[in-house]
Image (tube, rainbow, N blue to C red; front, side, top):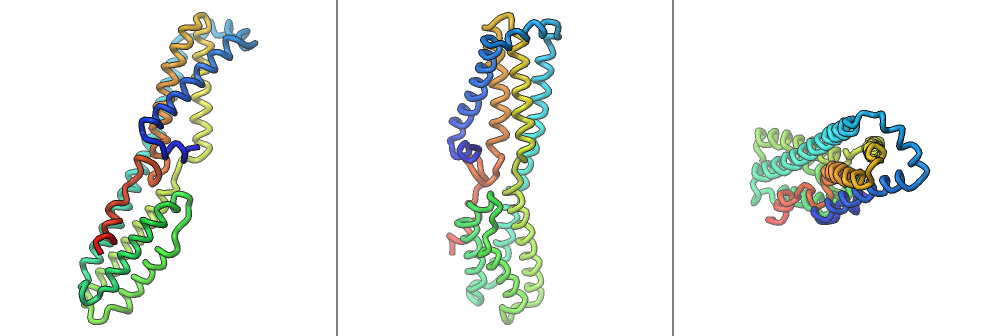
Length: 252
């Protein structure tokens, strides 16, 4: 379901999530007012009216913490990609392209494999073995190949390729670091509690109940949208761009 939403345009995704939440809120209101659950409505008369607002505030704070965590993970993923591209570009510039053309071609092949194959599969936890093999071969080439290369450049290349490896692993981890199912259960269940309490608390006026359901539905839907939009940092309309990585092999 989340993958389907991520493929939609941002505005459409936001409207769909918020609209679904509002519709669910209205459904709860109708269930409360039209079924045997209406017998429970008098029990809510002795509850403090501000309790509903406090519950909504608690939900907003909880959702904001979840959203903040997800957005920080997206920033971490962006930094990993930036570091990987920067290290690859630096390694390519340290080697004479005319004397050692195979080194630059290997970096281009790695970048092409990452952008065309691994970029799509890493969100499912699938690491591209071809990209890893190319990177391993680059390490081997720096250690045992490139005859006549100054020793200080060879050491610098070794350190730079280690930076590439670290950035690559950070990127792969960030791609699969999505919200656990247990957290989603908590987000959904607490939203249902807030909407149900609102429906009971405004049992004396069906119109008021619908208005509050709409307002709470918009707030809850907006919070869910802010979470879902970046749940998978490399998929969707707000996904991390691979343009910088593409330039490493397009210019070859």
